[in-house]
Image 1: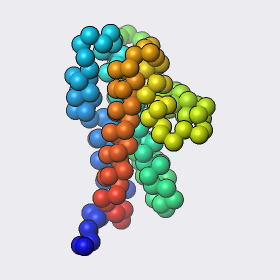
Image 2 (image 1 turned 30 degrees about the vertical axis):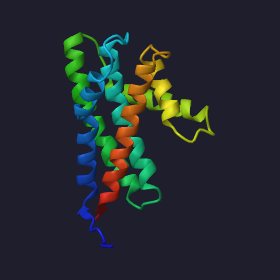
Image 3 (image 1 turned 60 degrees about the vertical axis):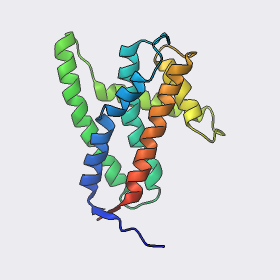
Length: 173
């Protein structure tokens, strides 16, 4: 059995890669296109909320999969600072086009609180997707729609799985 050599990367490189992944929309489009057309889903709300959930899932994955790693807090801080900068740009562009102030980062903070509260209400749950999916559907205003639940569960699972695989493939310098 051969040993695999992990790529040596800096905290900044890892954070940049994870930020780029978290805001990349390719998985979102695949999930959205895979939904049945007869499923009565508001595509604008779903796309907006699924984008938020993907960012939150990546941030959660960093904290969860880094465990007790000595660079965990530094990586999380660099990641969230980068997301904050990204959010400022989104807020400015959106506020200009809709004519009222919007704070994208504040919305992210509100959503993370919502998902954490939902998870805290189910402390014995072994699979967080069973809580995240329904909570996502509720945020979308469609808590009974199985397709919406599945979309939230899927983006959460895909995102944290990608974070886990990536963090396992690198070694922080």
